[in-house]
Amino acid sequence: MSIGSTGSTLPRRMLGRALKRLREGSGVPPKVAAQAIRVSAQTLWRIETGQQGPKLKEIYVQALCQLYGAASDETKVLVGLVELAEQKNWWHPYEDVIPEVFALFIGLEEFASELTTFQLTLMPGLLQTADYRRAGVWALQPQASPTEVERNVELTIRRQGRLRDDSQNFTVQALLCESALRYPIGGPAVMGRQLRHLEEASQMPNVSIRVVPLSAGMHIGLQIGSFVLLEFPEHPTAYLSEPPLVYVDGYTGALYLERESEIHQYRSGLAGIRRVALDEGKSRELVAQIAREYEG
Figure 1 (cartoon, rainbow, N blue to C red):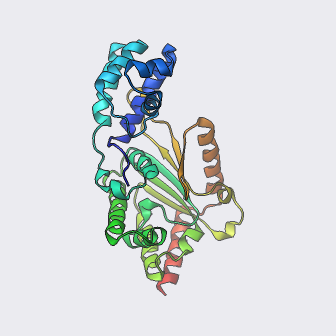
Figure 2 (spheres, rainbow, N blue to C red):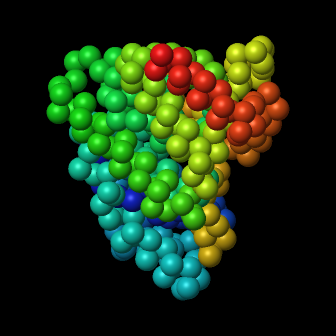
Figure 3 (cartoon, one colour):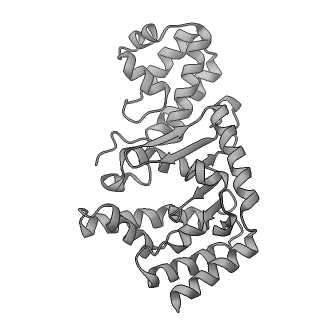
């Protein structure tokens, strides 16, 4: 499945957000801005929202900055983002096995400084073993070829590389319902190895794994459902900093939530989930106990 033209996700979003801020500050209507660079209003919207697809050109950015009355220093910074935004991502070779809606997530995950995930029934991708991922792909995409399945597994393993290789700049907090530990994805042997892998991952300095036991009963997480909160490092130029984002995966699509009110609500939900979750030590003990059950 094609995900459109290539380009680095975060610089594209930074550039689009800055151009929109300048346009709104100058009072230039979208139609006038689009005409200035000879594109449709829809294409201008895609540029301003950081969507994949429109070919970014330095001349576009220069023309828009001039139209909006941007300072020369700011224009130089934004023009410099064009080259970064058009660079190929590391995951470009896997675009045939990445759903378009998930390509954005991978691009954002690449730049996140902190990822917090709550999962009801499945292991987070960053903590899955190859066997677990393989079993999941076969179940969800029974029509996939063996090659496609293996490329999907390879993509997952590549994503996990940041946990090991960029541990000082990337942290993961995983809140897992006990049900995610007990669904026998791939069978007992696969789950036994998966839970032993969780044990090992929980020892990493940049990984926190906490389990919400079934004994917790009703809690806010059951109403919220599974989600991922991504947070990003501050950019030296403050207005280019990427705001936090919540990703909610669905069967027919996905949601990317960015409004402050939405982020606040999910943070409140996380606080409620943390209140009923076991601490890291007791979580590790429960993971080991269930692993032994699979191994027995």
